[in-house]
Image (cartoon, rainbow, N blue to C red; front, side):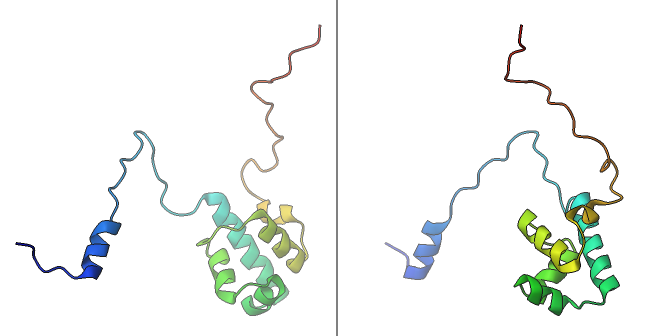
Length: 120
């Protein structure tokens, strides 16, 4: 005898997918990266220096003030395009947000391997 199950309950049972196993040795970081936190702090610092509200900055970027809040608290990562827009709105170069980060003033590393064979 078939038990009474509503159609919505049946749909819910069918929609469940089996969970995949995690890759061995792969660790998931909880929370934002330190660089993201630093950039977020620099955005907030510069905005306050200029006396601009989150609402005004949001209007200049075409986003909501809640999104600016998330950027400043490093809850949401900024894309390169958004960071560029923030730099223009706050009147600073993009590099301003990366000042004072350990290793920020080091040169780019040499590639470990080159696809081009040396000339002879």
